[in-house]
Amino acid sequence: MTNVSLQFKLAFPTSAQQLTTKLSKKFTVRQVSRQQCSRSYFDSFDWRLYAADLCCAFDADISPPTMTLTELQTGQTIAVQAVRKAPSFAWELDDGPLRRKLESCLTMRALLPLLSLQLQRHQYNILNHDEKTVLRLVIEEYQDLDARVTLLPVKGYDKALRRLTKVLSKLPEVKPASQTILPEALARSERRPLDYSSRLDLHLDPEMRSDQACKLIFRRLLEIMTANETGVIADTDSEFLHDFRVAVRRTRSGLNQFKGVLDDDSVAPFRDFFAWLGQITSPTRDLDVYLLSFEHYKSSLPVSIREDLNPLRDFLISKHRDSQRTMTRHLQSAKYRDTLSQWREYLRQSVPENPAQANAKLPIGKLAERRIWKVYRRVLKEGGAIDDASPAEDLHDLRKTCKKLRYLMEFFQSLYDKKQIRALIKTLKGFQEVLGDFQDYQIQEQALKQFSGEMLHDQTPAATFLAMGVLIQELDKRSNNARGDFRRRFLEFNRAENQAAFKSLFQSKPRRNAP
Image (cartoon, rainbow, N blue to C red; front, side):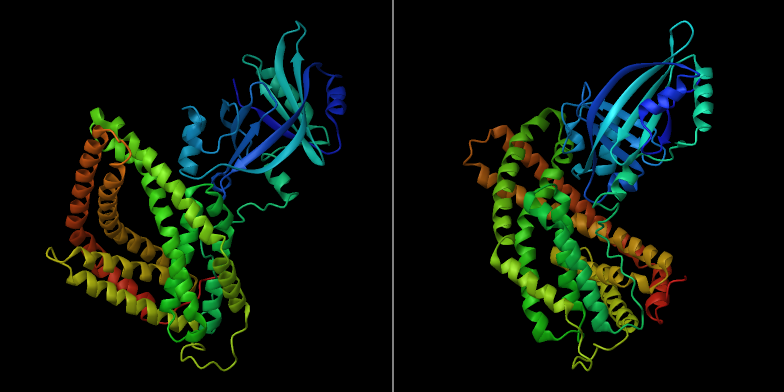
């Protein structure tokens, strides 16, 4: 016996009444209810559910209000949960299949409304000769969209399901529904699926002039920044600021890495501007990280003192609120708006036909190989010089150099074989993890010590300071472990196989991707 619902399209403008009138000639059809409803669809800003072939809908007008997660392509239900209102984050839901599935896809991202549809929902029972319900039928009518017909099986009555399915399949106005109505509704709206990504998604020609290619890269980074602006200011979720800052850091790196390409007098003020942007957004991002890590902090403590850490979360929330206000003032200032407008205008301008800069007309493929190879060799030199006696600053400097290398490889990855360049970027990311962990643990340890001093004036319980002290010891231990793991991870990154791969890709002329 199957308990899987079957779905069909009912071609517009055929109505539920017209369909059930036809079905009544062969079945006993009894209407149970008819209701005017509003259905809202949700996803993250970066379409994490849609990309995972999932569709999240909230029906506010049924009793009880319900949130449903279905497969986008088949319409099959994955999880259903009664809710009082649509949640902003998955963790606001009660524990269950819906919450667990949404959390695994969305992590820290907010659920945002995509669109709302008005519909009339008709429910029918299909009865047998004994007046028993053998099948349930739901027809949802939408304005200007094909209606959806759903067959809901009743245990023990497979024959009725097969018979009605056969009848429907012979009606010209009825077609099998291969997906939920969301893609069709989006096609008629202003939204386009997957219309945002933080990826660069550039397609550079290796023979393109370097100044043209660099402006193209910067324009894409500006698009990412401006796409996230509203979410950053509204503090919708922490990933808006994360993506905004990554675009800022990439821009800063590009301005410093693309030597002799763009007119230095023109871009110098923008170097200062993007450095300023990094400074004004850093405190809020740090607090985002601490709040996102809070449950992990708690779980690292002995069970007996975990709850004693809760006042720290209240302190972080209050501090984040103040930091967010300060950052928002900067992002709404004339300095920010005017300078960003000037940067946008500069990027729109055509490159000069005969530039004075030595590398402006150099093919971007050549510039890419030179810069990547030079920075890669610098990574190996800095990493090879670090030993157990090296100061922490040496590891921090190496982390910055690795970031420069990664940004360059991401800027220019479309110039190289996709599989090879992605494998090397993945290898580099793996090495960056140990450097990032080392620095993050050190920074968090120092921040907790600073917070302890600030919280002394807030009547914080003594037990909280004791819990924070244990957490500081744990972070110090993890920092030391990361430092101890550095040599092994560096040797892995510097193995002969990787050296050969870097040499093959970046000491020879970049190749176009295969068509």
